[in-house]
Image (cartoon, rainbow, N blue to C red; front, side, top):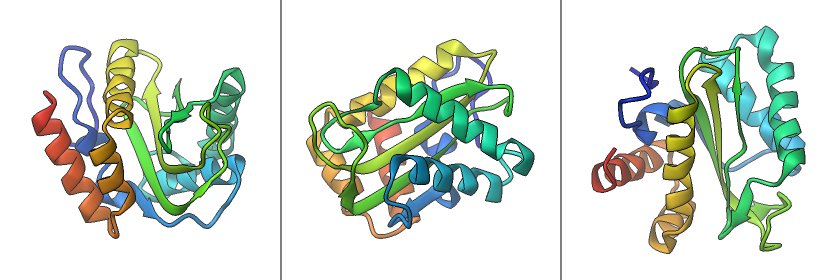
Length: 167
């Protein structure tokens, strides 16, 4: 099962971000393009209906307008809750070169976690965001993710993170 449905179940990042949702090396080099590329991955994985892709990109970018989710240390986590899904779905992009994402520390972003959750489960949404933010505070984990060369390697790291951090 890929997504967490109950607010009382600890969310596993490895379930929300499976290997097929990991992009190693981005084609797009702008925030809008990256979000679009990641949403397209959700469509390809049948997590989001193709008809909902454009509106989802707009929702995520509207959230980014409220304040950048690139808080520093090379990580960003654009997110939203939307009616396009009834489970938690996500995509991860790893880019060695780094991209401009309006980071609060003015640095480039190398790891982007896109999280989309249902409107009905705010608690789990915030739990997942907190778990992602926790990764952002752990330099060794950030370096391991950034150096990952395959989606499976990223997935293995998330499974270790979940096991070590109560997931």
